[in-house]
Image (cartoon, rainbow, N blue to C red; front, side):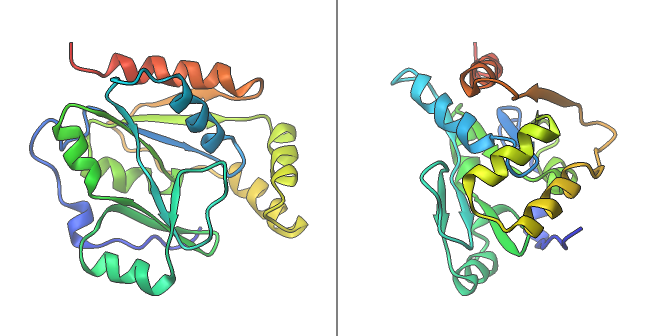
Length: 204
């Protein structure tokens, strides 16, 4: 498993209910499971005044048209770590990923926030946001392999490595319940289920 970079600030427990992640959805799944596509479909179905936000991911590679991310150089990524700009950050498949601290402000304003997270990073995310809602997008191995080939970002060897990693277990904290969200058919179906979960977390 790739090492996960962490700073002391990133593991500090939150205090208010918003900071504890009561309105945070931690979406995770194997590379190629379709998380970015689900989030794109979800955005198109949101009402204009609906307080559900998908957080940008900061990543050390150019972003694709299918994802909501901000590309950073390795040096800029490290600079933002040093400045405390990330609520969460991790390293996987040779790349650095981060979620900005702005999500704390959004949740404090009663918005539901969805982040595209990492299964390997769940325990650390849960340590910072113990009331988060964890959702794993699950996909049949054949479907996963086809999606990885179709997106054309990896070599055959890299695809095989990602398929093997998809089968590996990951640490789930004892007090964290992981919900499964199958995504083997039309992405609109899973996106609709995800939106139902998000709407259920909105203040009454």
